[in-house]
Length: 80
Image (cartoon, rainbow, N blue to C red):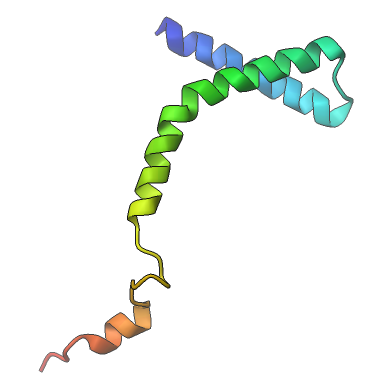
């Protein structure tokens, strides 16, 4: 629970800095803080990114042999 609260605070602060960056710019200190927060987020999400990439690679592509919907429908035998 404490970890989730800390994670929420990190994300909240990161969002504040991103918003400020877009609206009015950041000081050098804020820019360094945002860079550190981004690295923290990247490290936390890296395992999930690897899982998602592996799952995406396992899905066949349309070009790679997955039939298009119309081709699949046309190959099905008609029922009486």
